[in-house]
Structure formats: C-alpha cells, structure tokens
Length: 455
Image (spheres, rainbow, N blue to C red):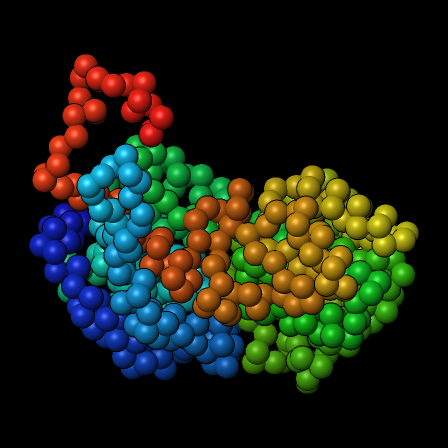
C-alpha cells in the first residue's frame, strides 16, 4: 500500500491529471465500467444485503450515473479560473482565483450503500484532478470483491487503486500521508480518522451519522406522511445514515398515524414484509442482535417479529422508550422506530420538539411533516446536515444540493459542484506589474500619514 501510495503521488506530480480532457475521459471510463459491471455488482448486493435490483438501481447505481454526467457537463465551468477585483492600494496588479487538485487522496467507504458511497466521492476526486486510493467495507465481501475487480480492470494502480481488508488495513492506510481523506462511517470511527489525520494536518471530509429526528405535526397530511416515512425507514432495512431515527408525534394524531404507518408497511410489502424481495436484511449477526435488543426498551405498537437465521426484523414502532435508553441515544441503523409524543397547542408542541432536538448532538438530517412555515421555523432553530419538509431521504437524490453533516454528524460536503470543491484547493494568485514600483511600502515608510488613509 505504501508503494502504491508513493506511485500515486509520483504520478500526480507528473501533471497528467491536470488536463481537463483527461479527467472527462476518466469519468466516462468509470461510467462505462459501472455499466458493464452493474449485473455482477447488483448480484453481489443481493448476496450481501438481500437488496433487490430495483432498490439497488435507485439508491446506488442511478445516483453515481447522475453524478458522473453532472461533472462531465459542468467541469469546464467549475474548474475555470475567476478574475476578482484588485484594490487601488495594489496598483498595478491583477488578481484571480484558480482551482487546483489537492493531490493524492484516500476514500474509505461503509457497507450500507457500498457502491454509491465509494464511487460518488471517487467522481469528485477524478473531476478535481486527484489520484485516489479506495477502501471498501469488509462487511459486504461480495460487493467489495466485485468493486475491486472493476476498479483494477479499469484504472492503472498509480492513478486509482482499491484495497480490501478490515480495520487493520484501515489503520495501515491512515498511517500513510495523504493530501486529503474522505471518510464515511460512524462518529466514533470518524474521531479515529480525525486523530490519525492530525499527525500530518491532513484535510478531511467526514460523512458520519447520528439520530435524525422525524416530526409529524397535527397539521400534517397523515396518510402521505405515514407512507413516506414508512418507505424511508424501511429502505435498506433501516440501514441508511439519513434514515428517520426517532419519531416525534403530536398526541392528537398519534393513533391515526400509527394505524396509517402500519397500513403503509403492509401496502409497501404486499404478500408480507419477510416474503418481499424488496426488504433488505440486517448486514450481519452482531448488527442483528444489537437492533433486536432495542425491542425490549419500549412498548411495541406495531411489528416486533424477528428471525435470527434470516437476519430479519419487522419494521417496528416502539412507544414510550426511556430518554436514557440505548434506542434513544444510539444510532439505530435498523427498522426499529422509537416514538416520542408531545401535546398542547402548536407553539407548545414546537418548543417541546426544539428542546428535545437541541439537547442532542446535531443530526445528519431533520424531517418535518406539517405546515411549511412551522417546519422552516424548526429548521432555522435546530441545526442539521440536511433537512426535508414533508418528505424524507429525498434531498440526497438531488445532485444540485450539497450533502454533508455538521458537528457530530460530520464536516465537509459533497455531491455535484461540492464534490469538485471538496477535492480541490481554491488558490489565490496575484500578478504584479514591474512597470511601476511605488516606494510607500518600503522602509522607512515615508509619507505614512498620507498612505494610511488609503489602506
């Protein structure tokens, strides 16, 4: 790995990746390779996670394809130098801002969306003109193997390389000096990455997680809210970093919402949730036991069925969990959904919601169902990485919106132009004329009282 990292750094220093035609060609090559390998990777997703092709295409492949096309279409504009004003005190000079690649980068991806969360950052690295070392997750071995074969077949190792392995490999990679590290994973592992990066003051993008609240107010369209929330919570078996993590209901609509949520799950998975090809399984036995353990921390309003052999947990609403319980303090990453209820008039309900959210770490997403004005007020007061009003998850599907966390849920952002920016350095360039060399800046600073007025 050290040898390949050194080779990538040497290749970057040749300047080969600076050419925009080269970058576009490499983006097109990645798109073509993903198209060829799509059947094998989709099959691997089915083996590792039980993910259907339809869900894999919607949540993995289509997002990468859109990202690639967006970068090819706009790279000339994004990379163009920009002339800016130069004040009179710097007469006679010109100023501009230029974009340059950060250099050799490391991208570490998680297991829950192993294609999208590895390749989307890679698109940004290629677009910006970097070389890249990729590290997929060992928890999805079939997907990691397929991606490794695809990348090694498609790119020269001194340009883009991929290495498999567990946390020991992660540690070895993090001991190497990089020009930038892009990590997607849990906040606890994000702290390890940040500590390692501090050794060389390496810039970071950390895409982490947290407990994303989902609020349903008395003004919400209950049927639509329940259907969209049920879809977002059940998507990928609940193993989504921006999945609704805990539910805040107005007491006046609680019973109606619970019934609507139950009906929505049954309609989404006609013929049975367990029998449906579209319900993803928990990734491994350890994760299954952890998520199953949450079921004892409240009253089951709906669901609760489990099957360890199949790593199956039915989408479950869990009422009255203790504020100190694990289910209310750990990121769930599964289809268990704790419910918190507040009552009273709207202003009282909103204050209770805000107090609860503000008492916790800043989440990766915040969801509100109800009046837009109330939703915007809650969003204004309660910080989060991203937010939706009357929807969940869908902000990630817009490649023109930045995606990223804040505080405990991460730092930095990507998607679209923000991906290009994440892997680029914005450089200031001043070009001074030698035709005139004004003496006021030189010691002993003659005429300083006059010059002071112009500074």
